[in-house]
Image: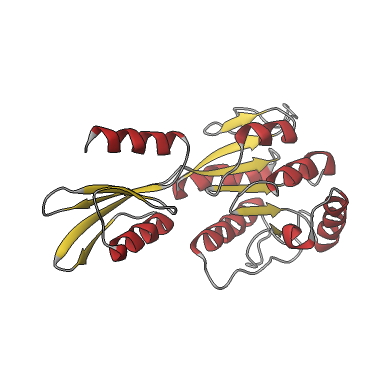
Length: 241
C-alpha cells in the first residue's frame, strides 16, 4: 500500500469513519472507498458499490468485474453496546454481547451495583449518564440500552442517545412506563419521529421472563436492526417492569 493511502486509512480509522480498502488482485492497484467517494487508483462503479455493500455487511469478500478480481476489505469502527444500569439483565448482556463483536460499557453511578466482581470483563463508567454519554459519543456502530427504570438515570441517557447516530436505542419497561418516558422526552423537545427511534418495551417478543432471557431478546433485536431484518417486533411488558 502506498504511503499516502496508508495515511488516509489510518486517519479514517482514527476518526471512526468506515472505509473499505479495494485491491485489484491482478496488479495490486488499490483505492479507499467510503460512502462519500474514492481515493487512489480508478475503480469501476460496480466495484465501488460492492465495496460499500461490504462495509454495510461488515464482511470482506472477493468480487469479479469485467474479468478482473477485486478484494474488498472493510475497516469499520468497532461495534459498541452502551448499557445504562448495572442490573441483572446487564450482566447477561455483558456476557453475551462480546461474542457478537460488541465492546461493552456499563454506565451506573451507583457503585454498589457497578463492580468489577459483577462485571469482570467490560468497561465500567460511574459517571452520571449524561456525562458518560457525552464522553462516549455513540456513533452509527453503537447500540444504547437503558435498564434502570429510574428516570433520573434513563432519561438523560435517552435524551443524549437521541441526539446521536446510534443505530439502536432501547429502553426497558412496560408500555405504561414507556408512554410516560416518551412524554418526558417530548417535553425536552424531541419530535415524535425522533422518539420513534426508541424501542420500548425493549427486545424481540420471545416471551422472555428471566434476566438472561430478556438479555437474549434485547441482543436479538439489536442484531435484527443492525442487519435490517424485516421482522422486528416489540416485546410485551417485561416481567421486570
